[in-house]
Length: 433
Ligand SMILES: [Zn+2]
Image 1: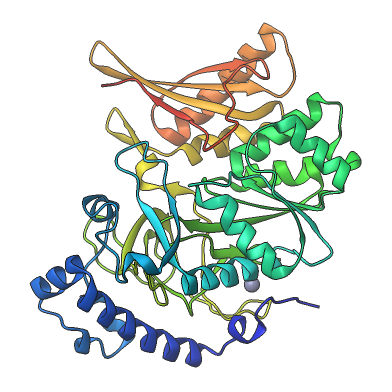
Image 2: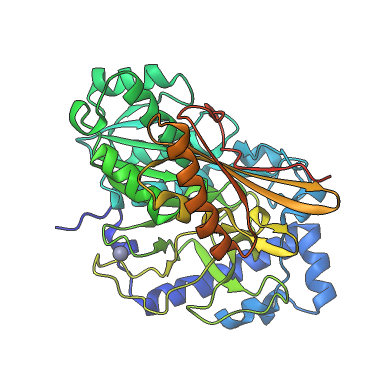
């Protein structure tokens, strides 16, 4: 029998969803127009007033918000409430500029916990579970997002946080962890650590459910993790500025991620023109928060590429619209000799080969004015030079066909590439400056 955390909300009729969205959109637009200087200025510039929002289609009249908007108003310029009402904050790492923040009132935290709990129950979490939370607890939005949700569900939480991989595996064994959550690349690290310790994750641990996010990953990567751990793998979506993990999540059908539409409106736009696209058309995901009090977001451009499913019925019984798993982020695209290359194209090709491990790097450099592409990938097991050369040759051919640029390929020994204990993996090394 299907389990829901919030059955009323999760199975709301489409008509009720549309009604609640319009009501909340109008409230949000009024709130930001009256309290956030940026939105008032932009709406005035576009000649749109809060009372002009009469239908959901009118959302297209509203201004976009970008990461740069938030940076320009760092830290508290986008607040719609007095600072004294804000009770928790999170921030992005800010590796490419000023960090952007996630700011929460008491009610915002309540909503975050609810959508996180819905997502976790959809991924199989129950009171009976021992749930190990491996994303860090701190400014990063991961750890606390899962924590707030799992508290609602009533599972036994093991808040191990990031790093100390051997200790993580030890905890799994000592406490009988049944479900984990992690940044995707960190799950790869945990897998290796278990194997190094002589532990077969499928046989020697009780971990059978996992929910992963924060990085793009391919179906091949999901299949690999699922096999090694004999695990049901779920995909969770969210980002700091909107609310961390829990904006969307896939259900047991594993065909798209349900977006919690009573709290967020999702649109897909053409990233070049900003025009709204039709269902099933791929473009940039844009989110509007419907219930956030502290720092509501209007049409926030996520830089993530996906599509909205046309169908709103799903065998799990949930009525909320689905988006395709995010395989590409606009900022991950690299241009080599004028050709657009996405890490997911490389990953999909590499992981089709069982002889290869799950760690790889994409190097781009410029030699005598010409871009050079080099893919370094680890073999799954230690193999001789001839075998490495054979694999490299096959990969060079396959990647050339898919990327339209011929790369150099190097197959290296297992455990050669650097590992990330905390934070996101660095797979693209661009030395062209
Ligand atoms: Zn479903």
